[in-house]
Length: 286
Image (cartoon, rainbow, N blue to C red; front, side, top):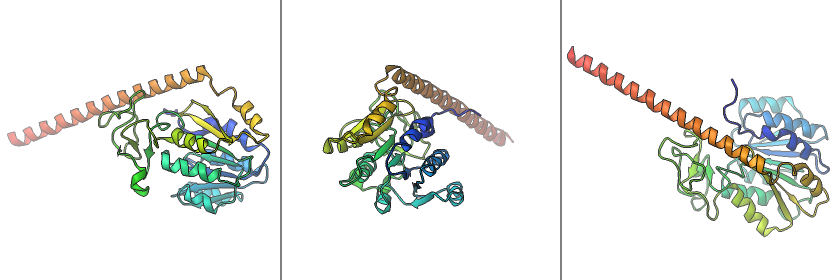
């Protein structure tokens, strides 16, 4: 069955593999492994240069554990980012697709580009666009410090061009898997905001972004000689109005599909409720 929602970093696998092949430390750190498909690609890229892939996951799946046991250059780091990064050797490439909220992402970027980090360090950041670029998304909000968590909902979804969430049971949502902040925009809110705040404090860092598939950002030192190679690789994607229009069209179609699914769910629920009422009437009549 074809995938309804393009959401995975594997959409950018070719770009990320090219970044992994640039000169510098061959080790790769992946934060958030999703289905593990990108982990396979990253492990291969690291192995081709004699490097190690470190996969940071708070609850590794059995599939991921089996994959690591079969590949000598794969190490699972069981823990939450950014704290888990402190015990790792510095890597040349970081692929970040974990918890999409300001506090977590800012901590990750600050850890990756801490003072003394090699100039050739590269970070690939997913979800810099809608819906999490300017709105926090939480998988486990209770795990974060209360002052770093906005009022949020697990049942109300996000809608493009709306600062507020949709009504209960509507909009783009995680069906209980994750929550969105109740409002969009403003300070300390969202993935892109977190990245920009770190870059404001570290002006030597540069950011290149592309809107496709919820947005991708690549961070590196603009003073590093390989920054030009990174810019050349990303040039077709950055500031491309055609890609921005394609992403908007994808989101509009996605929201239409979600609306149709919600209408069908409401219809089925209404039918079930009417059936229950009919059965009760039959019992009364008997």
